[in-house]
Amino acid sequence: MKYIDTHAHVNFNAYKEDADEVIKRSLEKGVGVVNVGSQYSTSVRAVEMAHRFENVWAVIGIHPLHLRKQNLSYQDSSELEATEIKTSGEEFDYKKYLELAKDEKVVAIGEVGLDYHHFEEGDDVEKLKQQQQEVLLKAIQLANEINKPIMLHCWDAYPDLLEILKKYPVEKKGIVHSFVGGYKTAKKFIELGYKIGLNGVITYTDDFSRLIKEISLEDIVLETDCPYLTPVPHKGERNEPYMVELVAKKISEVLEIDIEDVKKITSGNAIRVFGIKKESLL
Ligand SMILES: [Zn+2]
Image (tube, rainbow, N blue to C red; front, side, top):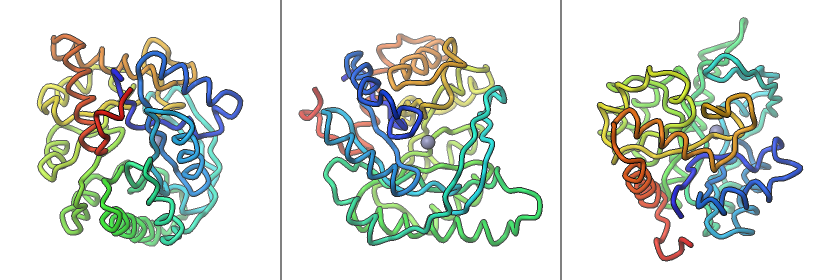
């Protein structure tokens, strides 16, 4: 394996017709895939897919937006593409997730976290925040019970997330995925032992150059968050895990180093975070 896409959603409906081909295409290009669930059904699908392929793993959990029923127009950070998402309003069933988490191909608990970005007018914001935080605490408890790391989603809520992680540490740490904050915030997560997940967003602008320069390559893992956030120059197309190389390319340009070094170091980081045995990599 050359790269590991640490946060993909080939388990989502965007790949309903051709999920296996998408996975094979990435594996052929030397990209391992970690599929992440956003609710119970997509978590189960991620585990099933992981068992069909070598170098494919699963992360299981419940995305904070799935805790309530909502029709969302999901706007990616480029503000160019909008995707309609229907969330189901699901409860976090600890026992069900615990059973699923025991699977050997489950490498982390997630995606879980805080999303204060999608509140709407008339929302009881304090109540919704509290609900998200309570579920996050349960997910932290689960990660610690099963001794696996955590995959964190966070939008407009870094201070609260930091506070929770300080108060309720995850033994195996984990990844702050799709990080879009500043370098000072990133360093606070790194101090707590977390890796920073970077994706196609960093190819849209040079706004993240400072972040990339200020933190160490040892603290970065690469992801696509596919089908969303397709890196330049494929923006507008459906994203696929193999495009993670374009994220590596952007980092190598910013740091003016060989892309091989970006590949080696960030893949090593992913292997260590997830506890993937090197000899199991093909
Ligand atoms: Zn995601």
